[in-house]
Amino acid sequence: MSVASPQTSPQVSPQASGRPMPPLARRLLEIPHAIKFQESLFALPFAYTGMILAADGLPTWTQLIWITLAMVGGRTLGMAANRLIDRHIDAANPRAASRHLPVGLLRAADMAVLAFAGLALMLVAAWQLNGLALALAPVAAAFLLLYPFTKRFTFLANPMLGWALAIAPSAAWIGVRGSLGWEPVMLSAGVALWAGSFDIIYHTQDFEFQKAHGLHSVAEQFGVRPAFYIARVMDVAAAGILLGLGLGMGLAWPFYLGLSAAISGLAYKHSLVSPDDMSRMGMAFFRINAYVSGAVFAGTLVAVLI
Image 1: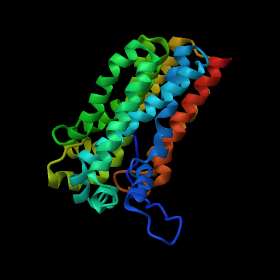
Image 2 (image 1 turned 90 degrees about the vertical axis):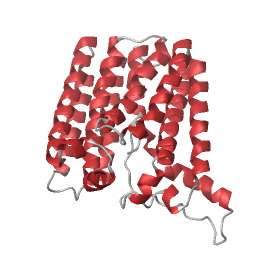
Image 3 (image 1 turned 120 degrees about the vertical axis):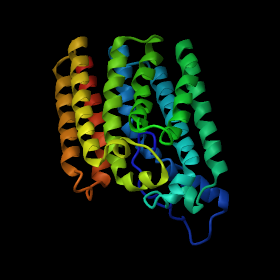
């Protein structure tokens, strides 16, 4: 599993010329593909949602920059650590065997250095925001480092992936206000359910592999068909929590328009795949992440600004 991202085969970066690139240069070019840096777009909109709700409008440029860097650093830490910790599992799993570490495009040391760089960026950004953000940043980092191990001992690994992503909106709120309230907790709960639901469905593909290798997930624990049902219930709960957040904060009508668009995305996700047909679990399925988070953010932004 990975933090907040689709797990497809890596696309090897094309060389700029016919001459072989030096090993270090090639590895540097592979790093964004290995951690799927571009898919930070899945998590950032919810972080920005927490940020604009905390600011009750637009934050300062300084807050925007440091919150963005903190989120990028945290996601880099989580993804790099996940790839490093799970490299032997990935090598044994036919679905993941073509990733960068198993095929030798990157070394374990490369991922370790990247994880430390992500941690450093997150800590520096938190330090620039406020004291509470800095105090809680190591707690968030510890959770991101713990998550990859959870599949080895608990079926709650999928929901814990959701909570890893759910750190973002509460962290952004803290970055603006220097305190925590019920609002970001509700937003994070909705994000955790949404992301956990997605992860449950995605890893039903690994049901047989997990059974054979003693790994754990909701599907491995309860079966593939019940896992799909649990994922649907989680998405309904996520929508309900976000609706409650809007009503509790008295947000204007654009928030509900954005939420409606997000709910339509969740419904589309469930129409794409089923326990009997997972053939459409491709990039369109993954891009729903960006659509859902982007719709909530856009609706929230307009609601706050008007």
